[in-house]
Amino acid sequence: MRGRQVLLETLLNHGVDRIFGNPGTTESPLLDSLLDYPQLQYIVHLHEGVATGAANFYAQASGKTAFVNLHVAPGLGNAIGAIYGALKNNSPMVVTAGQQDTRMRLRDPILGHDLAAIAAPVTKWSVQVERADELGPILQRAFKIANEAPAGPVFVALPIDVMEQETSVPAGKPGHSFTATRPDPAGIAAMAKLLAAAKTPAIVAGDDIARAGAHGTLVKLAEKTGAAVWFEGLRGQNAFPTDHPSARGTLAFDAVGIAKQLAGNDLVLMVGGPFFEEVWYAPGSPFAAGTKVLQIEAAPSRLAYNFALDAGVVSDVAAGLEALMSALGSAEVTGAKQRNAALMAQKEAEDAAQKARVEKAWSRTPTSMARAMAEIRAGAPKDVIVVDETITANLDLFKTFTFAGPGDYYSGRGGGIGQGLAGAIGVAVAESKRPILCLSGDGSSMYSIQALWTAAHHDLPIVFVILANREYRVLKHNIDAYRARFDVKSNKPYMHMDLNGPTMGFVDMAKGMGVAGSYVAKAEDIKAAVAAAFKSGKPHLVEIEIEGKR
Image (cartoon, rainbow, N blue to C red; front, side, top):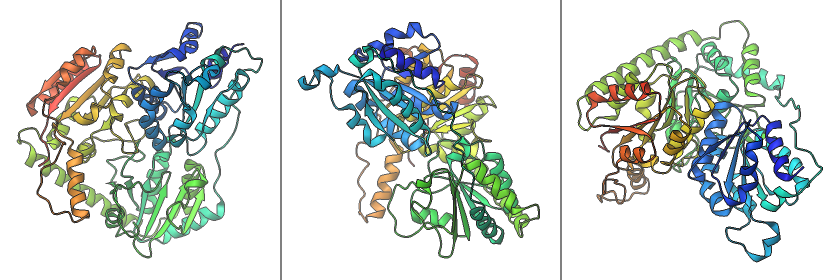
Protein backbone atom coordinates (compact mmCIF):
# COMPACT_ATOMS: atom_id res chain seq x y z
CA MET A 1 0.00 0.00 0.00
CA ARG A 2 1.27 3.47 -0.87
CA GLY A 3 1.36 6.37 1.54
CA ARG A 4 -1.48 8.20 -0.18
CA GLN A 5 -3.69 5.16 0.22
CA VAL A 6 -2.83 4.97 3.91
CA LEU A 7 -3.87 8.62 4.24
CA LEU A 8 -7.25 8.19 2.60
CA GLU A 9 -8.00 4.89 4.33
CA THR A 10 -7.20 6.55 7.67
CA LEU A 11 -9.68 9.32 6.89
CA LEU A 12 -12.42 6.79 6.18
CA ASN A 13 -11.56 4.88 9.36
CA HIS A 14 -12.06 8.10 11.36
CA GLY A 15 -15.41 8.94 9.80
CA VAL A 16 -14.16 11.74 7.56
CA ASP A 17 -16.33 12.29 4.49
CA ARG A 18 -15.34 15.87 3.55
CA ILE A 19 -11.98 17.39 2.65
CA PHE A 20 -11.68 21.18 2.76
CA GLY A 21 -8.88 22.31 0.51
CA ASN A 22 -7.19 24.39 -2.12
CA PRO A 23 -5.42 22.27 -4.75
CA GLY A 24 -1.68 22.48 -5.41
CA THR A 25 1.11 20.50 -7.04
CA THR A 26 2.40 18.75 -3.93
CA GLU A 27 -1.16 17.64 -3.23
CA SER A 28 -1.26 15.67 -6.49
CA PRO A 29 -1.12 12.25 -4.78
CA LEU A 30 -4.26 13.05 -2.78
CA LEU A 31 -6.14 14.72 -5.61
CA ASP A 32 -5.28 12.01 -8.12
CA SER A 33 -6.53 9.33 -5.72
CA LEU A 34 -9.95 10.85 -4.99
CA LEU A 35 -11.62 9.08 -7.92
CA ASP A 36 -10.86 5.82 -6.11
CA TYR A 37 -12.54 7.11 -2.94
CA PRO A 38 -16.00 8.40 -3.90
CA GLN A 39 -16.97 8.43 -0.21
CA LEU A 40 -14.79 11.55 0.20
CA GLN A 41 -16.19 14.85 -1.07
CA TYR A 42 -13.62 17.55 -1.80
CA ILE A 43 -14.91 21.06 -1.00
CA VAL A 44 -12.98 23.38 -3.32
CA HIS A 45 -11.89 26.82 -2.14
CA LEU A 46 -10.00 29.63 -3.85
CA HIS A 47 -7.95 30.56 -0.79
CA GLU A 48 -6.45 28.48 1.99
CA GLY A 49 -7.77 30.77 4.72
CA VAL A 50 -11.31 30.26 3.46
CA ALA A 51 -10.86 26.47 3.33
CA THR A 52 -9.60 26.40 6.91
CA GLY A 53 -12.24 28.84 8.14
CA ALA A 54 -14.96 26.69 6.58
CA ALA A 55 -13.50 23.57 8.21
CA ASN A 56 -13.48 25.31 11.60
CA PHE A 57 -17.21 26.01 11.49
CA TYR A 58 -17.91 22.60 9.93
CA ALA A 59 -16.34 20.97 12.99
CA GLN A 60 -18.56 23.10 15.24
CA ALA A 61 -21.76 22.39 13.31
CA SER A 62 -21.21 18.69 12.55
CA GLY A 63 -19.53 17.55 15.75
CA LYS A 64 -16.99 15.73 13.57
CA THR A 65 -13.25 16.14 13.14
CA ALA A 66 -12.65 18.40 10.14
CA PHE A 67 -9.91 17.56 7.65
CA VAL A 68 -8.05 20.24 5.69
CA ASN A 69 -5.52 19.93 2.86
CA LEU A 70 -3.40 22.99 2.05
CA HIS A 71 -0.52 23.75 -0.32
CA VAL A 72 3.11 24.05 0.89
CA ALA A 73 4.58 27.04 2.72
CA PRO A 74 2.67 30.00 1.19
CA GLY A 75 -0.63 28.11 1.38
CA LEU A 76 -0.09 27.20 5.01
CA GLY A 77 0.91 30.81 5.67
CA ASN A 78 -2.36 31.98 4.12
CA ALA A 79 -4.25 29.72 6.51
CA ILE A 80 -2.47 30.61 9.77
CA GLY A 81 -5.03 33.22 10.84
CA ALA A 82 -7.88 30.77 10.27
CA ILE A 83 -6.02 28.00 12.13
CA TYR A 84 -5.67 30.44 15.04
CA GLY A 85 -9.44 30.97 14.90
CA ALA A 86 -9.98 27.21 15.04
CA LEU A 87 -7.64 26.97 18.04
CA LYS A 88 -9.66 29.62 19.86
CA ASN A 89 -12.92 27.92 18.82
CA ASN A 90 -11.61 24.58 20.15
CA SER A 91 -12.48 22.94 16.84
CA PRO A 92 -11.13 19.40 16.36
CA MET A 93 -9.27 19.61 13.04
CA VAL A 94 -6.49 17.77 11.25
CA VAL A 95 -4.78 20.28 9.00
CA THR A 96 -2.37 18.94 6.39
CA ALA A 97 -0.22 20.49 3.67
CA GLY A 98 1.65 18.96 0.81
CA GLN A 99 5.41 19.27 1.22
CA GLN A 100 8.20 19.19 -1.34
CA ASP A 101 10.11 15.98 -2.03
CA THR A 102 12.33 15.26 0.99
CA ARG A 103 15.22 14.42 -1.36
CA MET A 104 15.33 18.13 -2.26
CA ARG A 105 15.49 19.31 1.35
CA LEU A 106 19.07 20.60 1.11
CA ARG A 107 18.42 22.39 -2.19
CA ASP A 108 15.90 24.91 -0.74
CA PRO A 109 13.27 24.09 -3.37
CA ILE A 110 10.65 26.54 -4.54
CA LEU A 111 7.75 26.84 -2.07
CA GLY A 112 9.67 24.79 0.48
CA HIS A 113 10.06 25.60 4.17
CA ASP A 114 9.77 24.01 7.60
CA LEU A 115 6.00 23.58 7.58
CA ALA A 116 5.79 22.02 11.03
CA ALA A 117 7.58 25.04 12.48
CA ILE A 118 5.22 27.46 10.71
CA ALA A 119 2.13 25.74 12.12
CA ALA A 120 3.43 24.95 15.61
CA PRO A 121 2.41 28.20 17.39
CA VAL A 122 -1.26 27.87 16.45
CA THR A 123 -1.80 24.12 16.79
CA LYS A 124 -1.87 21.53 19.56
CA TRP A 125 0.69 19.38 17.76
CA SER A 126 2.70 19.92 14.57
CA VAL A 127 4.74 17.27 12.77
CA GLN A 128 6.10 16.20 9.36
CA VAL A 129 5.82 12.60 8.16
CA GLU A 130 9.31 11.48 7.14
CA ARG A 131 8.51 8.03 5.72
CA ALA A 132 5.41 6.13 4.66
CA ASP A 133 5.72 3.77 7.62
CA GLU A 134 4.90 6.76 9.88
CA LEU A 135 1.73 7.86 8.08
CA GLY A 136 -0.75 5.54 9.80
CA PRO A 137 0.57 6.04 13.35
CA ILE A 138 1.02 9.82 12.98
CA LEU A 139 -2.45 10.36 11.56
CA GLN A 140 -3.98 8.15 14.24
CA ARG A 141 -2.24 10.26 16.89
CA ALA A 142 -3.28 13.47 15.13
CA PHE A 143 -6.98 12.59 15.35
CA LYS A 144 -6.55 11.63 19.01
CA ILE A 145 -4.83 14.89 19.99
CA ALA A 146 -7.24 17.04 17.98
CA ASN A 147 -10.15 15.66 20.01
CA GLU A 148 -8.62 15.70 23.49
CA ALA A 149 -10.08 18.43 25.70
CA PRO A 150 -9.80 21.22 25.00
CA ALA A 151 -10.11 20.21 21.34
CA GLY A 152 -8.23 22.05 18.61
CA PRO A 153 -6.29 21.83 15.35
CA VAL A 154 -3.20 19.72 14.73
CA PHE A 155 -0.91 19.92 11.70
CA VAL A 156 0.72 17.21 9.58
CA ALA A 157 3.09 17.93 6.67
CA LEU A 158 2.89 15.38 3.84
CA PRO A 159 5.96 15.26 1.53
CA ILE A 160 5.07 14.22 -2.01
CA ASP A 161 7.63 11.41 -2.14
CA VAL A 162 6.44 9.97 1.18
CA MET A 163 2.93 9.82 -0.23
CA GLU A 164 4.24 7.61 -3.04
CA GLN A 165 6.36 5.30 -0.90
CA GLU A 166 5.26 1.73 -0.27
CA THR A 167 4.52 0.61 3.29
CA SER A 168 3.19 -2.42 5.07
CA VAL A 169 2.07 -0.36 8.09
CA PRO A 170 -1.73 -0.13 7.84
CA ALA A 171 -4.00 2.88 8.03
CA GLY A 172 -4.60 4.31 11.49
CA LYS A 173 -7.83 3.47 13.29
CA PRO A 174 -9.60 5.31 16.09
CA GLY A 175 -9.39 3.72 19.51
CA HIS A 176 -12.56 3.02 21.46
CA SER A 177 -11.65 5.34 24.32
CA PHE A 178 -14.25 6.37 26.86
CA THR A 179 -12.90 9.71 28.00
CA ALA A 180 -15.92 11.44 29.57
CA THR A 181 -14.72 12.10 33.10
CA ARG A 182 -17.05 11.86 36.08
CA PRO A 183 -16.90 14.64 38.68
CA ASP A 184 -15.41 14.16 42.12
CA PRO A 185 -18.41 13.82 44.49
CA ALA A 186 -16.64 15.92 47.12
CA GLY A 187 -16.16 18.76 44.65
CA ILE A 188 -19.79 18.63 43.55
CA ALA A 189 -20.96 18.59 47.16
CA ALA A 190 -18.85 21.67 47.91
CA MET A 191 -20.28 23.45 44.88
CA ALA A 192 -23.86 22.53 45.75
CA LYS A 193 -23.43 23.82 49.30
CA LEU A 194 -22.07 27.17 48.09
CA LEU A 195 -24.77 27.50 45.40
CA ALA A 196 -27.58 26.76 47.83
CA ALA A 197 -26.26 29.42 50.22
CA ALA A 198 -25.76 32.13 47.56
CA LYS A 199 -28.01 35.18 47.67
CA THR A 200 -27.37 36.32 44.08
CA PRO A 201 -25.71 33.60 41.99
CA ALA A 202 -24.63 33.97 38.37
CA ILE A 203 -23.47 31.47 35.75
CA VAL A 204 -21.11 32.17 32.83
CA ALA A 205 -21.92 29.72 30.03
CA GLY A 206 -19.04 28.64 27.80
CA ASP A 207 -19.14 26.97 24.39
CA ASP A 208 -18.41 23.53 25.83
CA ILE A 209 -21.97 23.45 27.21
CA ALA A 210 -23.30 23.67 23.66
CA ARG A 211 -20.82 21.10 22.38
CA ALA A 212 -21.84 18.70 25.14
CA GLY A 213 -25.56 19.21 24.48
CA ALA A 214 -25.93 20.26 28.11
CA HIS A 215 -27.99 23.42 27.53
CA GLY A 216 -31.15 21.76 28.84
CA THR A 217 -29.46 20.89 32.12
CA LEU A 218 -28.10 24.43 32.37
CA VAL A 219 -31.64 25.81 32.02
CA LYS A 220 -32.80 23.57 34.87
CA LEU A 221 -29.84 24.63 37.02
CA ALA A 222 -30.46 28.33 36.39
CA GLU A 223 -34.15 27.97 37.28
CA LYS A 224 -33.38 25.78 40.29
CA THR A 225 -30.98 28.35 41.78
CA GLY A 226 -32.46 31.57 40.41
CA ALA A 227 -29.13 32.36 38.76
CA ALA A 228 -28.51 34.94 36.08
CA VAL A 229 -26.75 33.50 33.01
CA TRP A 230 -24.10 35.40 31.05
CA PHE A 231 -22.26 34.59 27.85
CA GLU A 232 -18.57 35.15 27.20
CA GLY A 233 -17.64 38.27 25.23
CA LEU A 234 -16.95 36.11 22.19
CA ARG A 235 -18.73 32.82 21.75
CA GLY A 236 -18.71 30.27 18.96
CA GLN A 237 -22.04 28.65 19.82
CA ASN A 238 -25.14 29.31 21.87
CA ALA A 239 -25.26 27.48 25.19
CA PHE A 240 -28.45 28.96 26.69
CA PRO A 241 -31.79 30.19 25.25
CA THR A 242 -31.40 33.91 24.60
CA ASP A 243 -35.09 34.60 25.31
CA HIS A 244 -35.02 32.89 28.71
CA PRO A 245 -35.66 35.27 31.64
CA SER A 246 -32.32 34.30 33.18
CA ALA A 247 -30.32 35.27 30.08
CA ARG A 248 -28.47 38.50 30.83
CA GLY A 249 -26.44 38.97 27.66
CA THR A 250 -22.76 39.21 26.82
CA LEU A 251 -19.91 40.06 29.18
CA ALA A 252 -17.54 42.96 28.54
CA PHE A 253 -13.99 42.70 27.20
CA ASP A 254 -12.11 44.03 30.22
CA ALA A 255 -11.96 43.22 33.92
CA VAL A 256 -13.59 46.50 34.97
CA GLY A 257 -16.51 46.00 32.59
CA ILE A 258 -17.05 42.41 33.70
CA ALA A 259 -16.79 43.44 37.35
CA LYS A 260 -19.50 46.04 36.79
CA GLN A 261 -21.81 43.45 35.24
CA LEU A 262 -21.18 40.91 38.02
CA ALA A 263 -21.06 43.45 40.85
CA GLY A 264 -24.36 42.31 42.35
CA ASN A 265 -23.48 38.62 42.40
CA ASP A 266 -22.05 36.93 45.47
CA LEU A 267 -21.29 33.70 43.57
CA VAL A 268 -20.19 33.06 39.98
CA LEU A 269 -20.12 29.59 38.40
CA MET A 270 -18.06 29.38 35.20
CA VAL A 271 -18.67 26.37 32.97
CA GLY A 272 -16.87 25.15 29.85
CA GLY A 273 -14.78 28.01 28.54
CA PRO A 274 -11.50 29.98 28.61
CA PHE A 275 -12.49 32.64 31.11
CA PHE A 276 -12.03 35.46 30.22
CA GLU A 277 -10.91 36.75 26.78
CA GLU A 278 -10.16 40.45 27.18
CA VAL A 279 -9.35 43.18 24.65
CA TRP A 280 -8.19 45.93 27.01
CA TYR A 281 -6.00 45.76 30.08
CA ALA A 282 -7.69 46.88 33.25
CA PRO A 283 -6.37 46.37 36.79
CA GLY A 284 -8.20 44.33 39.33
CA SER A 285 -10.42 41.27 39.34
CA PRO A 286 -13.64 40.72 37.42
CA PHE A 287 -15.14 39.51 40.69
CA ALA A 288 -16.09 41.68 43.64
CA ALA A 289 -14.36 41.06 46.96
CA GLY A 290 -15.93 38.12 48.75
CA THR A 291 -17.51 36.62 45.62
CA LYS A 292 -17.41 32.83 45.61
CA VAL A 293 -15.96 31.53 42.33
CA LEU A 294 -16.75 28.03 41.04
CA GLN A 295 -15.70 26.31 37.81
CA ILE A 296 -16.45 23.11 35.88
CA GLU A 297 -14.11 22.15 33.03
CA ALA A 298 -13.44 19.04 30.97
CA ALA A 299 -9.72 19.87 30.76
CA PRO A 300 -7.57 20.16 33.90
CA SER A 301 -5.45 22.80 32.15
CA ARG A 302 -8.39 25.21 32.15
CA LEU A 303 -9.41 24.80 35.75
CA ALA A 304 -8.26 27.71 37.97
CA TYR A 305 -6.12 28.94 35.07
CA ASN A 306 -6.70 32.64 35.76
CA PHE A 307 -8.58 32.74 39.06
CA ALA A 308 -8.38 31.11 42.46
CA LEU A 309 -11.47 29.00 43.02
CA ASP A 310 -13.64 28.26 46.01
CA ALA A 311 -14.55 25.00 44.30
CA GLY A 312 -13.44 23.59 40.98
CA VAL A 313 -14.26 20.28 39.32
CA VAL A 314 -12.71 18.50 36.34
CA SER A 315 -15.54 16.70 34.59
CA ASP A 316 -17.35 16.10 31.38
CA VAL A 317 -19.44 19.27 31.26
CA ALA A 318 -22.79 17.50 30.89
CA ALA A 319 -21.99 15.06 33.69
CA GLY A 320 -20.82 17.87 35.95
CA LEU A 321 -24.00 19.91 35.52
CA GLU A 322 -26.18 16.84 36.01
CA ALA A 323 -24.30 15.91 39.18
CA LEU A 324 -24.69 19.44 40.49
CA MET A 325 -28.44 19.34 39.86
CA SER A 326 -28.67 16.01 41.66
CA ALA A 327 -26.65 17.28 44.62
CA LEU A 328 -28.98 20.27 45.04
CA GLY A 329 -31.79 17.80 45.64
CA SER A 330 -35.52 18.16 45.10
CA ALA A 331 -36.13 20.82 47.75
CA GLU A 332 -36.58 24.42 46.65
CA VAL A 333 -33.40 26.51 46.87
CA THR A 334 -33.94 29.39 49.28
CA GLY A 335 -34.62 32.64 47.45
CA ALA A 336 -34.62 31.08 43.96
CA LYS A 337 -38.31 31.81 43.33
CA GLN A 338 -37.88 35.49 44.15
CA ARG A 339 -34.71 35.75 42.07
CA ASN A 340 -36.44 34.17 39.07
CA ALA A 341 -39.29 36.66 39.39
CA ALA A 342 -36.81 39.54 39.54
CA LEU A 343 -34.99 38.24 36.45
CA MET A 344 -38.29 37.98 34.59
CA ALA A 345 -39.12 41.60 35.45
CA GLN A 346 -35.64 42.71 34.39
CA LYS A 347 -35.98 40.85 31.09
CA GLU A 348 -39.36 42.45 30.39
CA ALA A 349 -37.93 45.89 31.12
CA GLU A 350 -34.97 45.27 28.78
CA ASP A 351 -37.27 44.02 26.02
CA ALA A 352 -39.39 47.16 26.37
CA ALA A 353 -36.27 49.32 26.25
CA GLN A 354 -35.10 47.58 23.08
CA LYS A 355 -38.52 48.06 21.50
CA ALA A 356 -38.37 51.76 22.31
CA ARG A 357 -34.82 51.94 20.94
CA VAL A 358 -35.89 50.35 17.66
CA GLU A 359 -38.88 52.69 17.36
CA LYS A 360 -36.67 55.72 17.97
CA ALA A 361 -34.24 54.56 15.27
CA TRP A 362 -36.92 53.31 12.87
CA SER A 363 -36.94 56.22 10.44
CA ARG A 364 -33.27 57.10 10.40
CA THR A 365 -31.48 57.31 7.05
CA PRO A 366 -29.31 55.44 6.20
CA THR A 367 -31.03 52.51 7.89
CA SER A 368 -30.19 52.06 11.56
CA MET A 369 -28.68 48.75 12.67
CA ALA A 370 -31.65 48.23 15.00
CA ARG A 371 -34.17 48.45 12.17
CA ALA A 372 -31.98 46.49 9.76
CA MET A 373 -31.95 43.56 12.18
CA ALA A 374 -35.70 43.76 12.71
CA GLU A 375 -36.34 43.71 8.95
CA ILE A 376 -33.86 40.88 8.34
CA ARG A 377 -35.50 38.81 11.08
CA ALA A 378 -38.92 39.47 9.53
CA GLY A 379 -37.71 38.28 6.11
CA ALA A 380 -35.82 35.18 7.28
CA PRO A 381 -37.41 31.75 7.93
CA LYS A 382 -38.28 30.96 11.54
CA ASP A 383 -35.89 28.00 11.70
CA VAL A 384 -32.92 29.87 10.22
CA ILE A 385 -29.36 29.17 11.39
CA VAL A 386 -27.35 32.37 11.84
CA VAL A 387 -23.64 32.51 11.10
CA ASP A 388 -22.57 35.76 12.69
CA GLU A 389 -19.83 38.29 12.05
CA THR A 390 -21.75 41.47 12.74
CA ILE A 391 -19.34 42.74 15.46
CA THR A 392 -20.75 46.23 16.14
CA ALA A 393 -24.31 45.15 15.23
CA ASN A 394 -24.05 42.31 17.74
CA LEU A 395 -26.24 43.94 20.37
CA ASP A 396 -29.13 44.39 17.95
CA LEU A 397 -28.66 40.87 16.58
CA PHE A 398 -29.05 39.26 20.01
CA LYS A 399 -31.95 41.54 20.95
CA THR A 400 -33.79 40.72 17.71
CA PHE A 401 -33.12 37.04 16.97
CA THR A 402 -33.90 34.25 19.40
CA PHE A 403 -31.38 31.43 19.68
CA ALA A 404 -32.87 28.52 21.58
CA GLY A 405 -29.71 26.48 21.90
CA PRO A 406 -26.89 24.72 20.04
CA GLY A 407 -27.30 24.59 16.29
CA ASP A 408 -29.06 27.96 15.98
CA TYR A 409 -25.98 30.18 16.09
CA TYR A 410 -22.31 29.99 15.07
CA SER A 411 -19.56 32.56 15.26
CA GLY A 412 -15.78 32.85 15.36
CA ARG A 413 -13.57 33.29 18.38
CA GLY A 414 -10.15 34.83 18.77
CA GLY A 415 -11.15 38.24 17.42
CA GLY A 416 -9.77 37.82 13.89
CA ILE A 417 -12.17 39.09 11.25
CA GLY A 418 -13.13 37.34 8.03
CA GLN A 419 -14.50 34.19 9.67
CA GLY A 420 -18.17 34.71 8.81
CA LEU A 421 -18.39 34.09 5.06
CA ALA A 422 -15.90 31.22 5.22
CA GLY A 423 -17.64 29.75 8.25
CA ALA A 424 -21.02 29.79 6.52
CA ILE A 425 -19.61 27.38 3.93
CA GLY A 426 -18.69 24.91 6.66
CA VAL A 427 -22.06 25.20 8.39
CA ALA A 428 -23.88 24.69 5.08
CA VAL A 429 -21.83 21.56 4.34
CA ALA A 430 -22.65 20.19 7.80
CA GLU A 431 -26.32 21.24 7.91
CA SER A 432 -28.37 20.72 4.75
CA LYS A 433 -31.88 20.62 6.27
CA ARG A 434 -32.16 24.17 7.63
CA PRO A 435 -31.82 27.57 5.93
CA ILE A 436 -28.60 29.45 6.64
CA LEU A 437 -28.18 33.20 7.05
CA CYS A 438 -24.68 34.65 7.09
CA LEU A 439 -24.49 38.16 8.56
CA SER A 440 -21.29 40.13 8.01
CA GLY A 441 -20.01 43.66 7.94
CA ASP A 442 -18.56 44.93 4.69
CA GLY A 443 -15.01 45.20 6.03
CA SER A 444 -15.01 41.70 7.52
CA SER A 445 -16.45 40.13 4.39
CA MET A 446 -13.53 41.23 2.24
CA TYR A 447 -11.18 38.94 4.14
CA SER A 448 -12.94 35.87 2.76
CA ILE A 449 -15.08 37.11 -0.14
CA GLN A 450 -13.84 34.16 -2.24
CA ALA A 451 -16.22 32.01 -0.19
CA LEU A 452 -18.99 33.16 -2.54
CA TRP A 453 -17.42 31.18 -5.37
CA THR A 454 -17.37 28.00 -3.26
CA ALA A 455 -21.03 28.53 -2.36
CA ALA A 456 -21.88 28.77 -6.07
CA HIS A 457 -19.59 25.90 -7.09
CA HIS A 458 -21.13 23.50 -4.56
CA ASP A 459 -24.65 24.98 -4.83
CA LEU A 460 -24.92 25.81 -1.13
CA PRO A 461 -28.12 27.85 -0.58
CA ILE A 462 -26.66 30.36 1.86
CA VAL A 463 -28.11 33.88 2.10
CA PHE A 464 -25.19 36.25 2.67
CA VAL A 465 -26.27 39.61 4.09
CA ILE A 466 -23.60 42.30 3.94
CA LEU A 467 -24.23 45.23 6.29
CA ALA A 468 -22.48 48.02 4.41
CA ASN A 469 -21.63 51.04 6.53
CA ARG A 470 -18.52 51.80 4.43
CA GLU A 471 -16.20 51.78 7.43
CA TYR A 472 -14.33 49.70 9.96
CA ARG A 473 -16.77 50.75 12.64
CA VAL A 474 -15.29 48.56 15.34
CA LEU A 475 -11.90 50.24 14.86
CA LYS A 476 -13.48 53.65 15.33
CA HIS A 477 -14.98 52.48 18.61
CA ASN A 478 -11.64 51.00 19.61
CA ILE A 479 -9.66 54.15 18.85
CA ASP A 480 -12.13 56.06 21.02
CA ALA A 481 -11.46 53.53 23.77
CA TYR A 482 -7.69 53.76 23.23
CA ARG A 483 -7.75 57.56 23.51
CA ALA A 484 -9.79 57.39 26.70
CA ARG A 485 -7.74 54.62 28.32
CA PHE A 486 -4.36 56.16 27.56
CA ASP A 487 -5.51 59.75 28.12
CA VAL A 488 -4.78 60.76 24.54
CA LYS A 489 -6.35 64.17 23.97
CA SER A 490 -7.45 64.21 20.36
CA ASN A 491 -10.08 65.51 18.03
CA LYS A 492 -8.35 63.95 15.02
CA PRO A 493 -10.39 62.13 12.39
CA TYR A 494 -10.37 58.34 12.15
CA MET A 495 -7.44 57.63 9.85
CA HIS A 496 -7.70 54.84 7.25
CA MET A 497 -10.94 53.44 8.67
CA ASP A 498 -13.36 54.47 5.94
CA LEU A 499 -14.14 52.17 3.01
CA ASN A 500 -15.81 54.56 0.58
CA GLY A 501 -13.00 55.53 -1.73
CA PRO A 502 -13.83 53.68 -3.91
CA THR A 503 -17.12 52.21 -2.68
CA MET A 504 -17.19 48.42 -2.88
CA GLY A 505 -19.91 46.86 -4.99
CA PHE A 506 -20.79 43.56 -3.36
CA VAL A 507 -23.55 42.66 -5.80
CA ASP A 508 -21.06 42.99 -8.67
CA MET A 509 -18.47 40.92 -6.80
CA ALA A 510 -21.05 38.24 -6.11
CA LYS A 511 -22.12 38.16 -9.76
CA GLY A 512 -18.51 37.67 -10.82
CA MET A 513 -18.36 34.55 -8.66
CA GLY A 514 -21.66 33.08 -9.79
CA VAL A 515 -23.87 34.29 -6.93
CA ALA A 516 -26.98 36.39 -7.56
CA GLY A 517 -27.25 39.58 -5.55
CA SER A 518 -29.59 42.36 -4.44
CA TYR A 519 -28.76 45.88 -3.30
CA VAL A 520 -31.06 47.50 -0.73
CA ALA A 521 -30.84 51.19 0.14
CA LYS A 522 -34.26 51.65 1.78
CA ALA A 523 -35.21 50.00 5.06
CA GLU A 524 -38.71 49.14 3.89
CA ASP A 525 -37.24 46.95 1.12
CA ILE A 526 -35.06 44.76 3.36
CA LYS A 527 -37.68 42.22 4.44
CA ALA A 528 -38.80 41.45 0.88
CA ALA A 529 -35.22 41.21 -0.40
CA VAL A 530 -34.21 38.74 2.32
CA ALA A 531 -37.37 36.67 1.86
CA ALA A 532 -36.81 36.49 -1.91
CA ALA A 533 -33.19 35.43 -1.39
CA PHE A 534 -34.27 32.48 0.74
CA LYS A 535 -37.08 31.60 -1.64
CA SER A 536 -34.58 31.30 -4.53
CA GLY A 537 -33.08 28.16 -2.99
CA LYS A 538 -29.68 29.27 -4.28
CA PRO A 539 -26.74 31.13 -2.77
CA HIS A 540 -27.69 34.80 -2.78
CA LEU A 541 -26.08 38.00 -1.51
CA VAL A 542 -28.06 40.94 -0.12
CA GLU A 543 -26.12 44.17 0.35
CA ILE A 544 -27.85 46.53 2.79
CA GLU A 545 -26.84 50.16 3.16
CA ILE A 546 -26.76 50.98 6.89
CA GLU A 547 -25.67 53.90 9.01
CA GLY A 548 -22.10 54.39 10.12
CA LYS A 549 -20.74 55.39 13.52
CA ARG A 550 -22.91 58.05 15.10
